[in-house]
Amino acid sequence: MKWEPVHNCMLAAATQELLDRAGVGEGGRIVDIATGAGDQAFAAARRVGPEGFVLATDISPAMLAFVAERASALGLANIVTEACAAEELPRHHAPFDAAICRLGLMLMQNPAAVVKAVRDVLRPGGCFSGLVMSSPSANPFFVAVPSILRRHANKPAPASGPGFFALADAVILTKLFTAAGLTGVTITTFNAVYALPSSDDALLMIQEAFGAVRGIIADQPQSTQDAAWAEVRTILDQWVTPNGFAAPTQFHIASGRRPL
Image (cartoon, rainbow, N blue to C red; front, side, top):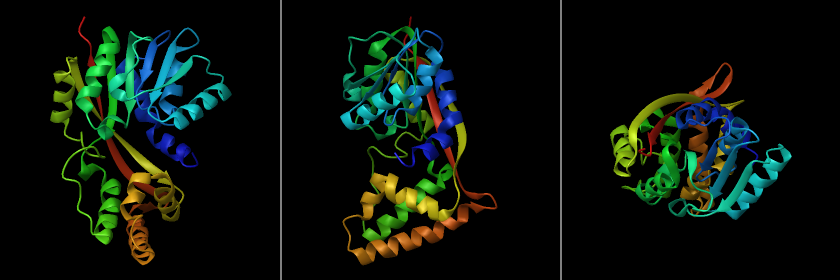
């Protein structure tokens, strides 16, 4: 969890917009899909207040244990955690006024099934908002690093399937929501910056926190890994500013409602 504050700072404004788009407010019942370390669940819990309820779901019991411990430390007694696949959301807490998913939907094997499962646990008129990465061109940091590692590992880029940019196309994202029966679908594009003190810190964050990226090169000989990381370190300098490392990022927030 060392790098969570950096990640959460980068996503702070986008998270508030995500909650706004979902209509998260006082007294609401919210489900957070693929909660991870729970930052967006904590933000939702603060908004709904003591009369509200947040169900934080994830497939990782270890992450949910962290979320429960952190929620207790923060005095957020209105958060409950439950381990489940995103396609199999528990019905015993439904219906929900809103559902949120921050940077999880694009990594799902079957996002269509996930959105349909979310719709089914919403009350009529309830809203689902999901935050995903936008286009590769607007996220050069997330393109350059994996590309370098794949080249050194002699591995091709995935042709399709889950990944950073699986739902980057706003048209595909809109169809995903409408096909699941959600209405009034909107796509909002949101810019942010990955900020760290230096490119050395950025390299360390990638190596320690970006497991899927690190895994590209992890099975290679040490000499290959060293060469790959040396090139990554060099390319990171393009995002160094007088105030430190600052890599631009961009997201889409897709929102839609279960019909009345």
